[in-house]
Image (cartoon, rainbow, N blue to C red; front, side, top):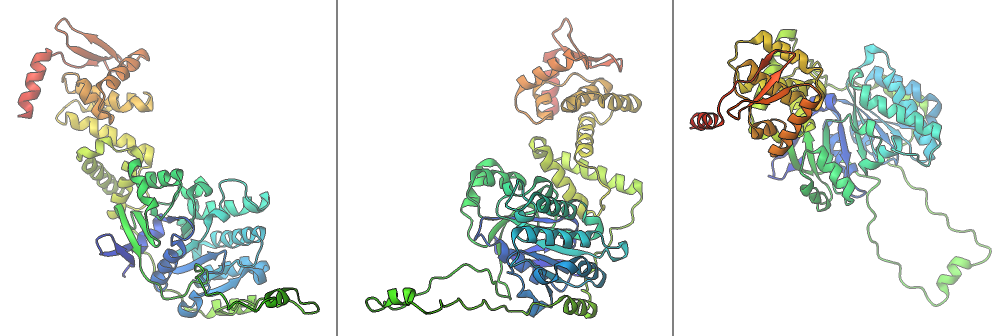
Amino acid sequence: MRSDIDIGLTGANASAMIDLEELLATRLLVQGNSGSGKSHLLRRLLEQSAGLVQQVVIDPEGDFVTLADRYGHVVVDAAQSESELATIANRVRQHRVSVILNLEGLEVDGQLRCAATFLNALFDADRDFWYPVLVVVDEAQLFAPAAAADASDEARRLSLAAMTNLMCRGRKRGLAGVIATQRLAKLAKNVAAEASNFLMGRTFLDIDMARAADLLGMERRQAEMFRDLQRGSFVGLGPAISRRPLPVRVGAVQTADRGGAPKLLPLPDAAEDGAAHDLIFAPGELPLMPPERSRRVRLESADDVFERIDRAPPPAFVAAPPPDLTDEEREAAIEDIVLQMIADPAALFQPPATLHRDFLVRCRIRRLGTAVPDATAFRRRVIIARARMTHPDSEQEELWARAIDVSVRVPEDMQGVYLLLARAAVAEKVCPSDDEIARFFGSHSPGRARRLLTHMEQIGTIVCRTDFQGCRIIAFPELEIETAAVHPKLADAAQTAEAL
């Protein structure tokens, strides 16, 4: 079944596609200042995926209720159905009906409580009803604030806990969070950190531009580009979007946005002298009340909602499970991915978080499921594999295994260099140069390498000595091995010959 949806165009005028099945597993975070086109992007995403997956929209302003006319969403007016929200949410999961929780008209406290009740009921549904659901939360900073907000502490705590469950634990229950916020700084970190896909729109504050650049793996000097983005333009990254930052222009939508930006209208003709004063202050007349805002859909009672849920057909999309792999096959695939990554010279100087993000993307491409190493385990795999690749032909595998075991007790920031030096000793090779050691932990400074060796010797991890020919030798007392001794001139000549 098709799982790619079109959200617009890339910078090269090609179709910008989102892998919906991957999005269900990895979640999405959208950031952009007011007016940057976040709601338009969410509407495009909802329209394109309406026939493929069940949708639940947490709508604080009533902007998305117009989806009901065209795509059959059930509008749940929280102001009328607050006491039945948990029951409605249970039936939504059971019958796989797309709904819009309209929170318009409620005070902030009421919005947070209703959203928390609804999300918690979705989360607590029976295991038999854990079908895939796209849960879209607009203005997520209201429901998961990073600091105290206008609402009461109790309402904020309930809402924040529900949003944390959605983003941190919802995946196993089929709940895929798609959250949009005006500023990352306003959004609780535990909620924002669980998204693996990002679409970053226009923003102006330096701190927001820097955070957006960091999340997309871009350099700080590139952060200025977020200030120049047009309305409806975003930069995307993630396993469901692209492995590299991708400019995206969101396409057109089929339904109207009730929350659109106001347009200029001509003023009425100037009244005669004194007429305007009389219109405002004329005694004995009731003031003209503004006409009630028309609604494009009828707000339904709880009984109407229950009836529509019971007879609504389920969506056709069901995410396919990953292939059934044995532990040995999964381990071999993970090892192959790690070796491919360390073979790229540019990977030496990438931050660990960027490398792990790329690793997760490759794992999802290979459909390895969720049983993959976390950031800490992945970092250790990388340093072991890189150290081993420096001298791949050593036959002392038992001694090398001992060195790996000992390295666990070495401080984490020194484990890579320890294994690099130990591999040279196991292979009976000369000690790596300062430049090689610095390059191994992602630096261009030989001085940092020398300072690191001095510190490692001070804590007793290694022993450095120099023979009578001026060669540096690294000894490992616990392993009872040391690097080989070769005169520096001979070592330089050998390295030159090897390079040629």
